Image 1 (cartoon, rainbow, N blue to C red):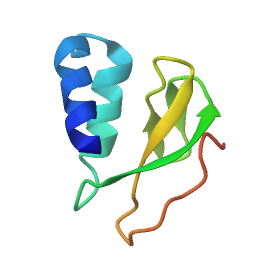
Image 2 (tube, rainbow, N blue to C red):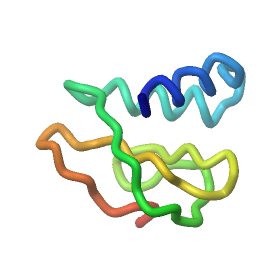
Image 3 (cartoon, helix red, strand yellow):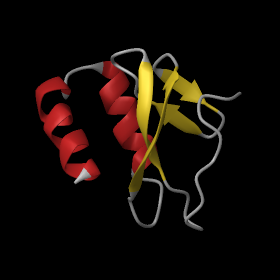
Length: 76
């Protein structure tokens, strides 16, 4: 379900540079899974070894790491 929401948004915003960068980073993982997280204020852009997509200024979905964990949200 979460991936479907992201995919739908991506189809409409595929020409946006933030969406393109996010999709490149997302594809570096073996299995792409997302989890809803507490809404956290954040800006779109690179963070640590990933890329944050926050078109509304908040993150509500977080991609799981290869080991299944959820890392920090919007931390450098």
